[in-house]
Image (cartoon, rainbow over all chains, first blue to last red; front, side, top):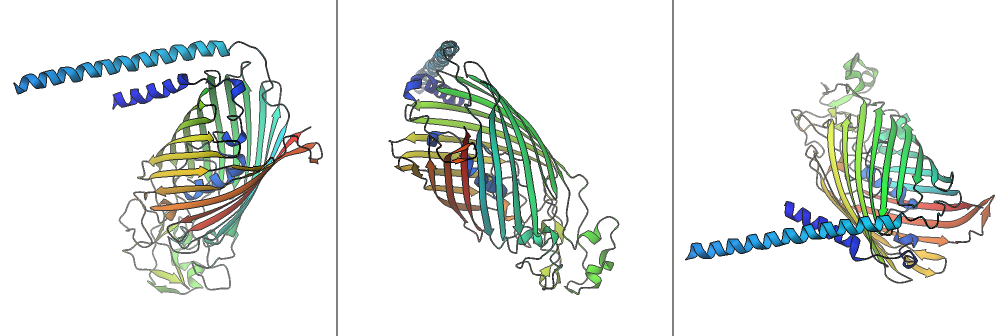
Length: 70
Length: 457
């Protein structure tokens, strides 16, 4: 198990080094549709999911509290 | 002979394991050394751009509606009809080159047939779990105010933020504080973050109308509800009811994030969230009907045997990842996956894909699909299947086993020059989306969302 975790960490760390995209190459990465987060206009949808579904979190939305939902 | 072969085999395995460990160690040392050297390179101050050039204003609104036959308010059997209208302003103000203040203020007004049946006996029509009542609990207003202050370092590789929020509705009040730290390195190709949030919430518990006379100081069956209406079925109505001792609910969340540019057209992220909740985690107005207790009715409405009882602690873990691919100048693929589990026995998988398609310069289409599945909570019991001897029970079908499909479609308009104006605000973007959500039960919902982004001249 520990070995597996070490391998995952090593791979993740290796990923940080195998590619370096320069600022001038980030035109596509900086496209608004490439953002690694939910869009603002989808926020109320995420809130509805947090009311109706058990699972929350790991999506940039609320993880509980602040409303009578889960 | 066999023993000798085994010894040779064992020696070979040990050697491979040793070599593997050496490789892993080498990779880690190499990686850290390289990341550190690049961090130092990043810290060279060349040009300091404002974090936010000008004030931005977002107006977000949505209309949500749902229906189903498993209302938790009526013990798992009854209408779940609900509509909700939400309006939110998010204003981001640059305080200087490095600091941004974001004010987020919103209201949400809902009208619910199911929660109207907290008191199903307040209209002229016969009480029925599938018919909305007209009582005070048929609608409510939720209001929220959040302030976020963020500071970025000169090289923009360190970002700190602090958050304070307040929200209120008739039977619920919440105060939240939080903060986050984000570190960018590897020429801003890699990002790690940690965030924490604490919510201190308080219920103003509202119980089903027929249970209130059996609470502390109540007059039981002498209450006018029972003297002015006729109980049918089990006429010796005697519910198991006691008000909750404590009405507080605290939530503590800790989250970790990692994101990486994998290619000039591909980037991904991983997120890990831990949440601990303590206090009143039951919803006080959700009825439960016991299978081993004779049923009592007024009109067509079955009188509650109890309200749901759930443990006063819950620990949740969610691990998710995103992978976005800029396929070409027309198509982008956005994917998301999340695995979730908690100590109430629920495990869940969420997967979604959205494919933005730029049809012309200013317009983009957003078709999307999302799949969700969850197992039931340990204490979930369908309608009439809980027993009066159980310690915990709920008939909230949101905690049942189900899967759901969601299809969405949206369109956006973007004008990077923000030519259209309202006062000093230039309209930069409009988003309009529609989503249809269907469970493999009777529940379904739909939502229309709209977002308007303005930038100050």
